[in-house]
Length: 127
Image (cartoon, rainbow, N blue to C red; front, side):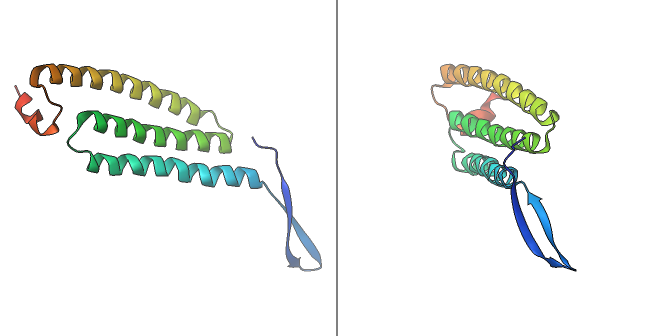
């Protein structure tokens, strides 16, 4: 947990000032971390729609979406001082690595058979 604490005098309530301690660093990390993770996920979603013809780029933006989600889990885990989010990040990264390995293997086999990496010809693979 971040130890930077700043004190802020809010307003006069009754006959005394209310002294509130706000952990500004934790709020800063939480807000900008969530914004950064959500931005990564949004770039991945937009990339899926823009790169709909190239299989390798679809795989890359899918990894970017996994990275955005795991980044949000990690930020929330640190700010909430809980280990569960970091365990979920570990599982997400393991699944993403397995998905990348299998996806790249299938792309290499498809390229050897067809000679192109066009997504449009995938319906011909039905058995």
